Image 1 (cartoon, rainbow, N blue to C red):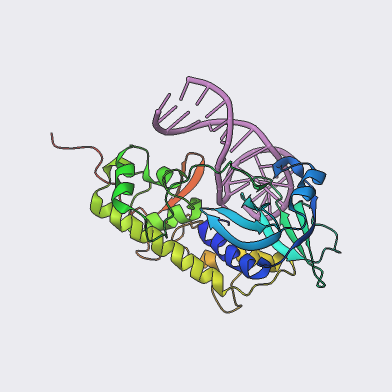
Image 2: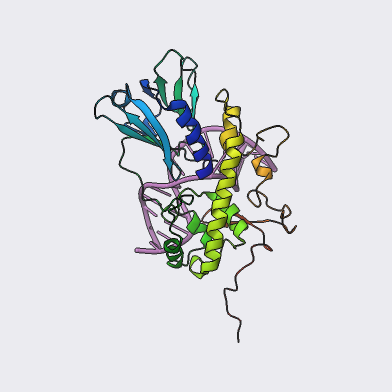
Length: 295
DNA sequence: ATGGCTGTTATCCG
DNA sequence: CCGGATAACAGCCA
């Protein structure tokens, strides 16, 4: 479930774990999604560099590397649908879908692992190939009037717009659905027909949805030991504590087809938009009067 | 078991 | 140019 909140939580963990650590040796196991793809080139590029810190832009992780001279670098990592980044014992056999493994220097044997079963993610060192992304929804400098103008520029359904990376960064299918519910907006509503007032409500809903998810994510106990424990960072199946609800149990609409709306009891609907599942409550997110009936 | 679904997004068409 | 469909891929579930 790597959307902005999950990436943000991962960034914080990785920053704490990696800052100051150096790369002893790099292995490329699946070059298709890696730059440089060649194992020797890759190792030559990053071996000996030290992690300065970890940040993100949208759903892209940015791992900053310092060299002794001016050979600094940045890794742009994207988790795709199923990517996971964690620390592990380098003496263990690499995970089945390991993409890159960085052995870290120091007496405590540790390796940074990027694995990605579906292979939709990527791991690029020193790339300038970062796509143009829309504004960061949680940044204080988020220019709401300008964003409102962007919404006015298209009749595309609002949910499709929220999934457009050039319109706003970091939102994926889950939080697009959740934010639209919180704002009480029908996902099919044409973007251009959203009033300023409603757009403000949407921004507020986006921010609170993402904030809450980050908050929840930071409560999960970090453990790199097993895939199952790692999954707690990303996957909504497991509760943070046995007596706490799982994230799935906290969603308003996502993956809740046919279940009663937590707000009004109406049955949640599932529809398809651009080949992605859309969930909404027909009562809390009513259709806007799209056609005039004033005959 | 076969088909349909899944957290993403670059690219290809009409 | 815009926007929808597709492709990349593995795994899980009914």
